[in-house]
Image (cartoon, rainbow over all chains, first blue to last red; front, side, top):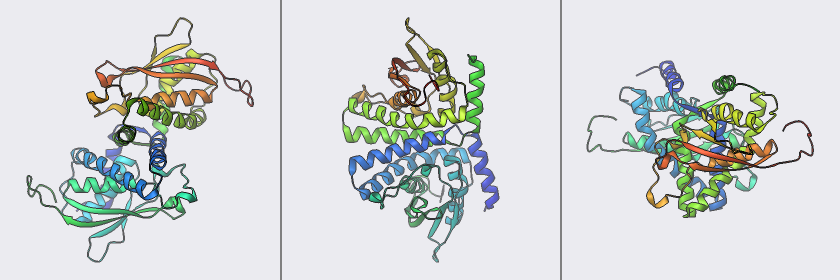
Length: 188
Length: 188
């Protein structure tokens, strides 16, 4: 298994090589989506679901790009997969790494903590929308990308820096290891 | 007036200093907005308008950031403003510069040509949505940002690489120089 610092270097290298755009433009564009959904759906639960689904559709596409560019060996455990998501994938796409913590006893659940999160810059949630999971797109991206490597997970935001908490924390729960019908033994 | 190569260097320098995210993540996130709008509004003209309006709201915010970070001298002509948008602002935010061409005789209209456009990667417009101006958010951003420097313009996509044309071309038409009530003589 690769060490955390090795993965961090890998994430840095991949991010430096990738095509990039200004983070602020991305932040504002994402903010515009959330605003559009809030206006259209007028219900925070429905907005949270729409953001998650949007992320899922991105995740299933972005996973291929990640596997092709990262050229990492196949993961042999969920612990390793979690570290790669946190240190390599988050860094490669968002420009910031996450940290992994709080494993459940059965080793099927973990938390991804984001101390810094470009999606949340300049954002304030009005009290009238207190239940809004502004960054729920990230949960969907993780779910979609993990499904592509045969891991069915559920993700949810359990702490949110936008409502005054220290960091944004996403809880990832492994529900099922899917069977590969075509490429057996190719990936976990 | 600054030369084009001086502005290009300025654009490169600003882009290298700025916080960034992966262009593909941005592209897919923007694609998700367009898809959401197409589903919700089910009418390409309404989608084009919604994308333009979204861009306008981003433009009026992003202009401040641009003026603060670029520390360029006040423009003395529309020609200079056009070059700064093309070489500095496009580069700083999208990571790609545009070129200015096709000035009208009265010098109030010009075209911005984008040979490369991260918004359009992996995008295909189905024939059923032939009138969709996929990148119309860019028109709105330019209109919003120029309004902040007292130039009321109308912008439209007059050529679209997505429908097989050589490049994406945005036509910018100056309609009015607005009066500044607070900071007279501060900016054109």
